[in-house]
Length: 245
Image (cartoon, rainbow, N blue to C red; front, top):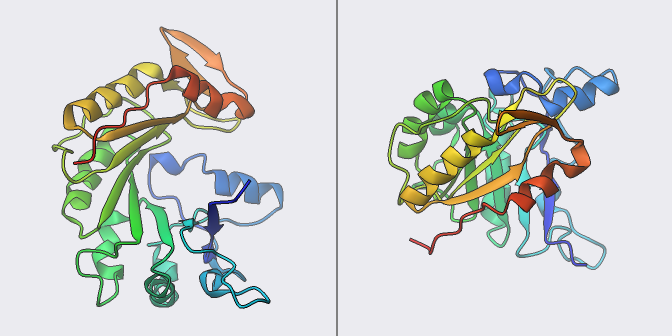
């Protein structure tokens, strides 16, 4: 089967900034190898979008969705010196679509390149909103941010969220899911359905990505092994795909 997406981690490591970071998977994985995840380092794969094969073709083929900086935060302060070069690679590879998730949307305006304008067409900037407090703070900033493609990530979803501003016309999708790992906090199906209803009212796409390790439905707590968390979410069959606005 043809691989139509890749991952690119130009730097590694992060600092926890909000409740959603408590049981960070990067910290959990690094911890198994005795590595300090709070130390941010530039990786050996920094130049991946420009790497070529022996025949001269790019290793990352045209049309790829490139998941970017999933072992850090693209807007983290420690990467300020490296980010301009990363933007240049994104600008050069207009044939590749880059997607990154941030909890630091309040830093975006300080971090964009001079020619950013209202955003690069081939870059999606996702913003995490894991609880009501972070939604109240981040959503207004995110709404006004100059970004071509916006997706809200409610993962790990820690409580019911009611968005403080209309979503229609500027958010493409909301992705929701619970928390994984041995110390996962519970996710209630009622919170998932609440987000879905808000998406339907606003004609915004909705995707239930995964249940998390501790999932509450109709008052009962289910402990769901990692291999089944995504498949159980798919079985719920509650994703919503409105006609394009």
